[in-house]
Image 1 (spheres, rainbow, N blue to C red):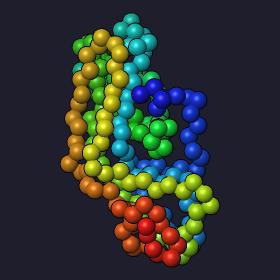
Image 2 (image 1 turned 120 degrees about the horizontal axis):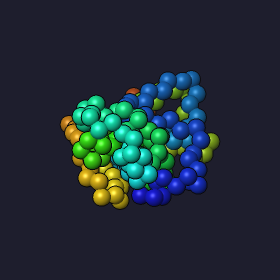
Image 3 (image 1 turned 45 degrees about the vertical axis):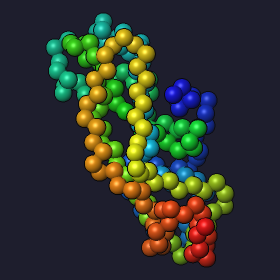
Image 4 (image 1 turned 180 degrees about the horizontal axis):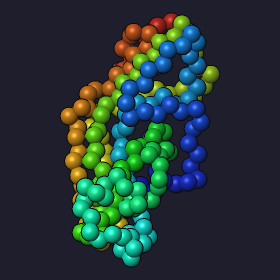
Length: 187
């Protein structure tokens, strides 16, 4: 888990990352970075100092629904919505984590785990290096690191909209192919 939040890890430049579908139409498309739709990993790490601060200063009269989504009660160790995972070479979605002083518990955002879909259309598709296309699908891993003694309350996890991944290049399904060649051949 710590490697995913390692601030010394440099994320690739020029990445297109979306929790929904990605669609690119161009005359010439140079794929020299990451194009990612959907997420395979959902991560979060509870910041113990943030909990301590809210225990001292937090409003103790709020219900869970009033706290979820309110950044004043955020106890995630990052403000980012996504973090680069150096092990997988793609981005992970950060799960919102919130502390409720009234119930002394950490709450998660409700999660809707959705599949990835990428649509690319161009007269010429090239790669000048390091091009990678990833569409998430199938199961997803959810990993919340809570090293405190504060109970973790997981809200809804909806996986009903998690279809198989889809990668369409010039109208041809390349989802299960490992390499795209300009001659419209795949290996």
